[in-house]
Length: 259
Ligand code: FE2
Figure (cartoon, rainbow, N blue to C red):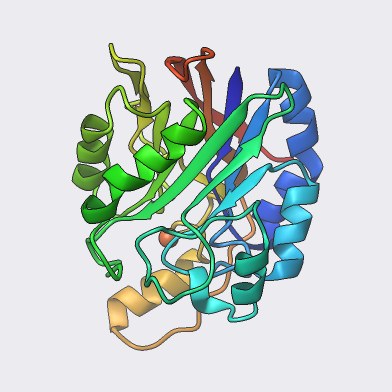
C-alpha cells in the first residue's frame, strides 16, 4: 500500500501545483491514499470551505491543518460536517472538528489520519503528549494503517514523537516549517518518519512569503503585510509504503519542480 503525503500547500502557487499535478503524481507513483496539509492554502494562512473542496477534488483523500486552523472562521462548520479534513486534535475540546478521521483508500484498506500540534510557539490548548496515546488506540481499533501529521516548530518534538509512537503507527510526518529535512527513515518496528516533509509552494521566498517583506519585518520590527511569493514553485512531501499490518517498509521524500 502506498501513501502520498503532500507538504504544506501555500497560497495560489501551491494550490495551482496541486490542481495541475496531483492526479498525475498519483497515477505515476501508484498512490492508494493521499494526505495533504492545507493549513496555508488561503493566501498563506488558513483554509476556506471552497479551497478545501478544490484540494479534495484535485486528489487529496484527507486534508490536515495546523496552527492557522481558525484564520478563516467559515471553516468551522465545514470541519464539523466533513470526514475528509482534520484539525489538530489538541485544540480546544469546545472547537468544531476532529483530530482523527478514518477513510477508505482506493484499494479498500482503511487509513486513519491523525493531526497534532506541537507546543513550541504554537500554544495548543493541551499538550499533544496528554492525548496522543488515547488517539492512537482509537485509530488502531479502526485500522492498523495510521498516519500522523505532527505540525510543529521544534525538530525535537517531532523526533521525540516518532520515537514515542515507534511500532504503534505507520508514519509520523512533520509539517509546519516548510523546509524539507533529510532524515526520512523507517524504524525496525515499522514506523516511517521524517521531521518535515517540506512545502508545496513558492520556494523563492522566506518559507512562502515574499522575501523582501519578510526581511523588512525582521530588520525593522515594524508590522509588514505579508504576501505569498510566486517563484520557484515545488511540490514537496513524502511517499510511504506499508504492508497490510500497517508496518512501513519504505519512505522517500518527494520534491518536484512546478511547472
Ligand atoms: Fe503552520
